[in-house]
Amino acid sequence: MLKNILLQATEKAGAVMRDSINTSFKISNKEGLNNLVTEVDHACEKAIFEIIQKNYPDHFILSEESGEIVMDSSYKWIIDPIDGTINFANGIPLCCVSIAVEHEGKMILGAVYNPFLHELFFAEKGKGATLNDNAIHVSSKTEVDHSCLVTGFPYTYLDQPNGPLVVFDKLIRKGIPVRRLGSAAIDLCWVAMGRFDGFYEHKLNAWDSAAGFLIVEEAGGKVTDFADHPYSPYQPHIVATNGKIHADLLDYINGRK
Image 1: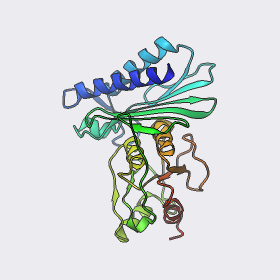
Image 2: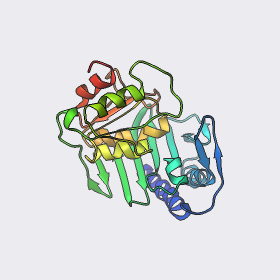
Image 3: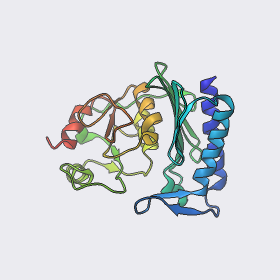
Image 4: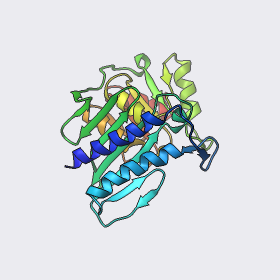
């Protein structure tokens, strides 16, 4: 039942996205430069909420646009109605719906749907990960120097040792390809299916990564924070890899290489 409701909500919001891209819609700015939200983000969120609250009115919800809807429940839905809003607002089809379900502090279900590429990623804890119902697995690369990586840059960040631009500079000066797609959820899913060998980012929110990190783990990958601790979406740092390049990539990120 949970899985079916999750997929219904994901696909419904994806249909709203698909029907709205490259149309006229209102765009406003949240805190920080180019931190956009569109009326389509809100429409997608509304579609998701309607399905969840009809079936599970007592469940906790955490969503990017509405924040927390606190309920006394062991279940929490973590929602990004459109991950990659800047892409969406500019008609770039690298954006998606991302929804995860957490139970008693553990992520148990995750779905990420890009309706423009017709890619629906799904994972259930302990049961593997799929793309359009076909099993997916991470890549087999063993060295960062021969990998294809992906990252993102926060809208605002402090000048910190080994910050986003410092790490990026080190990698590209070594000739390592590093892409920037503009959607952390897609980045994670593309690690899960082996298009990328690793992903790192210095500042994410829970709704950016909750579904995607479970999909990576269920595809055989490894996800941690920068200190190589087990990943929690409630802290900002993430490294997600095929597992084989994980220690090597952490060395770059932490200034050891």
